Length: 88
Image (cartoon, rainbow, N blue to C red; front, side, top):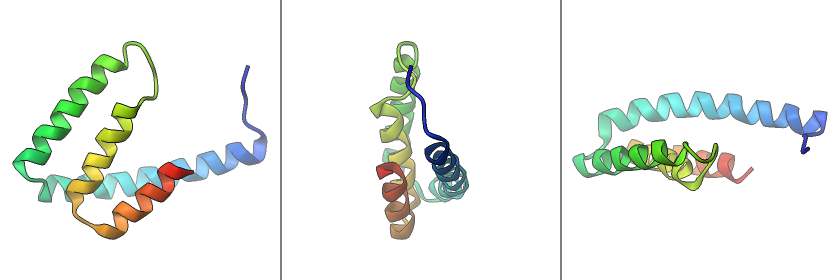
């Protein structure tokens, strides 16, 4: 099986902590700033994601859904931070 070395696991947990903090605030901003079209896009992605989770755990739809939330927050710094976190 695959495993992460202890130092990689620590980095992974650190990134997850930051991601949780950023995503909570980003979701709040998106809820306030999203256009009706952006909301429809996120709803569609969430519906697609639910179907996809029946066969896989992590997928592109999940990433697309979270990117849509970040975009809807309309904050360039958050977009930059999130793209850096996803790239790790």
